[in-house]
Image (tube, rainbow, N blue to C red; front, side):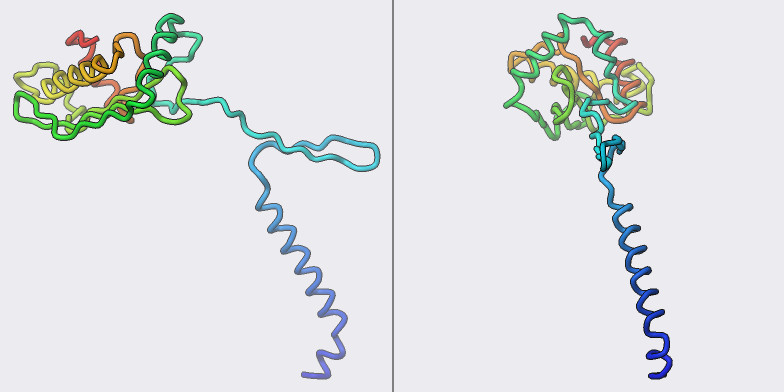
Length: 190
């Protein structure tokens, strides 16, 4: 075995160096920074630059945030002003809010870093949004939603903010947003 190693010492050494170089290149190529890389021809060397992805906020598809250019400019100004008033008062989080029909809900009003300046988030937990029936006699979730939503309006009002002048995202799922929008329109909550 010793004579084999001595005889093929140079070949083994070259193979190890090639292996180390290939492994190093593969490692480096996997750890490239995110973004687009472009190469600019120079005089004797080439310069490589990495562009960062845009920092522009893009809301998730389920969000009820229309593009800024489609929004009412005055309501955007009012919403920005309202969010500024709420800046040090958020989140508003109320647990075990009692509803007249015996249900309990949790109310949550908050903002997320990176959201547009004119958006707040509103969520009401403890309501079944899959049952869209708008008859409170048949669907106790409607009553729970109405009373909870009215409490959120009241909480914002006591902090100097009129919810009718705000843009907000309701919930985190499309079916929740659709049901909430249906109930808000049906019962003229705004």
